[in-house]
Image (cartoon, rainbow over all chains, first blue to last red; front, side, top):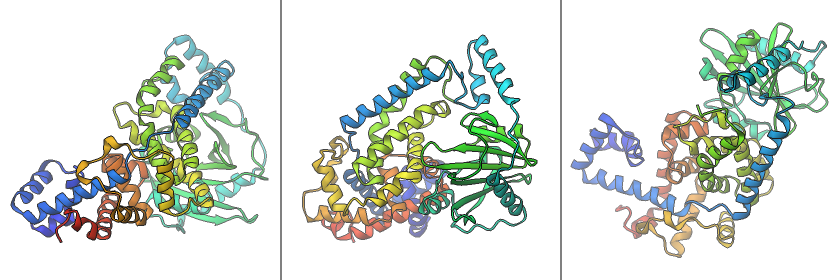
Length: 271
Length: 192
């Protein structure tokens, strides 16, 4: 290995302890025989030390730590308060049921699931769903990102810069790859984000974030509850509707898959 | 996957054992992102509550700090960055002075005596060089050098490809090296 290759390919990772196996052996071998590169490696490690020195750990102020512990206590109290009303419904059922230890409790939860899963989706016209489906259909043959889409981070930054949520679902565990993102303006002036995902088998998912003021949406407790989300079958498509915990935003996911399959995709995803 | 079920007391105890030891690491990153201690406190609290709520999604045996930082960055992207922009924290120097004044200075146990900096003009040069780094380079250097995450973990935290992590670390450190040439020569860190 020559010095150029070492510095270009190995130096940074070597200093960060990211090399192993054959790469580490090659790097170490080069360093032993090259004082110049050994010096560069020492410099790289010194720069790391400078960053650590000047931007090191800041202790959490006691009052912040105290308020966090108090917030956890409050969360525990809330959980106890809602448990008798709706056992286990805070999490996706598929995940929760696997771990319901007492058999009797599992049976009760399963009963609740059966009852709730048969709640019919509300009838009616919901323009936000129609608009999302229209774009979903259009994007099947032609999706052109209009924000930098080289990585999920780039897309998230573009959304955040337009004061919209930068949450990006990771559907990779279910086989969907991120195609890209778009920012568009609706006819009423509000901005929406459309993030599009495609699987190798041709399956697609559209994820849309928008504000929900003055929109005609199904009642909050309608649809099929699924963890934090509510699932709908609407005009032949499966829709997952979620209200974000902060801000006045909703997330609408659109899929052409049956509801059960889409729920599995969502369960396996990371958010 | 983390053990699920059990009582809420067990869940709370496990969370306190596994997640809360990383509170200082979260607060450190939050201060650097939000650039004011008020927003940083809110950001950390939101992150901890979300992590507690979804603690069953944490895979036991993986790096809990990386998992918590992933949530923190997501939260930051979704609100706190905007808030911070609307309320600029002043110049980087003012911000660092404010941290000093609030006695929130870096933990001295993490200091490397060999690189301990004197309170001199050169120290200000180092501060300026670090603050002048574009955010995407500064973030990866903080994650690798201060939070001591692997490239793979940083890729997860920032939701970017691992190759991008590597190139940002490399480029960020080159920029820092260039900015600190005079300082580094004086201290014998670099030769030429």
